[in-house]
Amino acid sequence: MGVMGSIIPMPKMEGSMILTVIGSLIGHIVFGITVAKIVGDTYCLSSTCETKTK
Image (cartoon, rainbow, N blue to C red):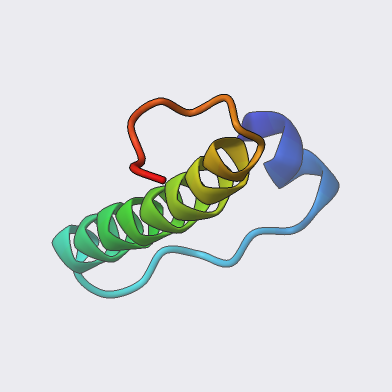
C-alpha cells in the first residue's frame, strides 16, 4: 500500500475508521464468495469435480 500511495495520490481518511474496516471486510467477503462461485462452477463443469452430482 505504501508504494501504491506514492504512485497514486490517496485521499485522507475521514470519518469513522470502524465503518471503513467493516465496509472493507464486507467487500472482501462478497468478492471472495463471487470468485469461489465462478471458479467452483467452472472447475466442476470440466468433469474433474467429484462433489457435484451429475
